[in-house]
Amino acid sequence: MPANEPDDEALPSGSSTEHIVVAVTRAIVEHRLLPGAKLVEQKLGDRFGVSRTIVRQALFRLSQLKLVRLEPARGAFVAEPSIEEAREVFAVRRMVEGQMVRQLIARLKPADLRLLKAHVKEERQAVERIDVATRTKLLFDFHVRMAEVLGNQVLVELIQELVSRCSLITLMYQSADDAEASNAEHTDILAAIEARDADKAAALIDEHLLTVERQLTERRRVPSLRLEDALGTP
Image (cartoon, rainbow, N blue to C red; front, side, top):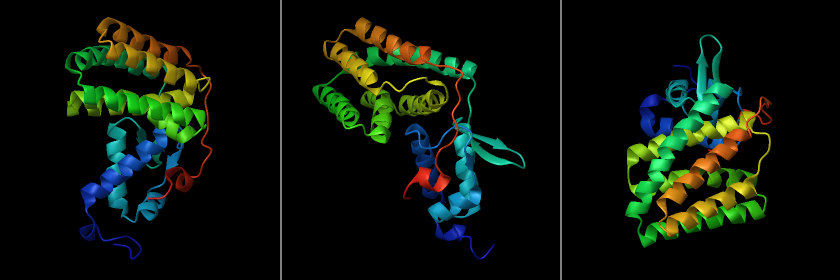
């Protein structure tokens, strides 16, 4: 092993791998790592203080989540989903989340409602102070919070994957960032949930996701941050 690489035996490889997966996913969700950005193994290893073996494990996991594209002899790149793939992802989200909100309403507890209200309030505050990274993450995480309320870990992981892919998609194709409108739509969805109106809540989620999908264009963007800056402090 090269002298400048950490010893794998001295590292909790599972947690180290997951740490990188979470950091890269968050950078994508918060629109700091853009589609097509190259993920250099050595830079990632230096950033997180791990060996390239650990980095490769993390990149493979990210490729399974469809967030990273691995190319032989070229390396790893943030994925660049096609417009067709984008529409398919939104179609799946509409199917899954429409049923999810119906189940949520059937099982809703006061504590669940308080959690969702607190989340939407945080969204609004981030929008008002123009905190782009925080508001972006919170707006996507609203959908994850609904899955968490149901207590189904498989559903949580599915929604997290779909939401992360949608974040990448909107970064590539969305023509405008209308965070205020998204927060208002979440507020309306939450009001329907509180009223236990399953049909209205499902219809609002469907329209909310359709609104985002309608904003998709063919306009592409390019990375604007260095990898080290996009990932922030480890």
